[in-house]
Amino acid sequence: MPVEPLSQKEIEDRLAELPGWSLTSVGADAGAKAAEVKLTRSFRLASHFAATALVVHIAQVQEELGHHSDLTLGYNTVTLAVNTHSAGGALTGLDFALAGRVEALAAGHGAE
Ligand SMILES: C[C@H](O)[C@H](O)[C@H]1CNC2=NC(N)=NC(=O)C2=N1
Image (tube, rainbow, N blue to C red; front, side, top):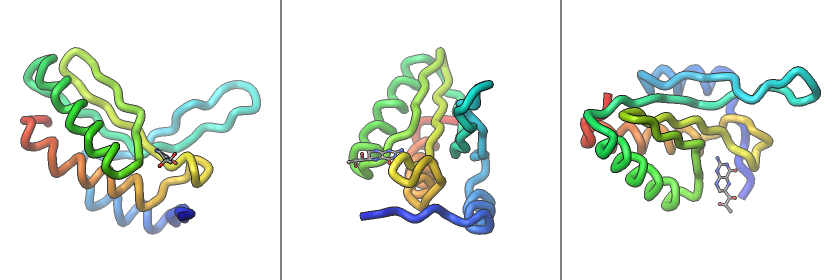
């Protein structure tokens, strides 16, 4: 099933509902490769183990949705960055659906 890119207005409206999430430009290089925009958020946790548990929980949700962020584990931080590869790297409803699911579970991990 094809997924449609969201318009700039749709992106702004959905971002307004997701405090803590922002758009970041990643992957630009000096040559041919253009920067991609990703929907991004970082969380801080109480410990490395707590951060690792959040990564596992997010991975479960990503498998359920069939949609996967770049998911980075730091010492006590977890960072997600996501766009939709099958839409050419555009932002789609799938990215915001994942962000909403992650918001709902992160609080239960004490993530800030
Ligand atoms: C078949 C499978 O669902 C697709 O390859 C999914 C997997 N996870 C994905 N994740 C992201 N971020 N974008 C995609 O287009 C994508 N496609």
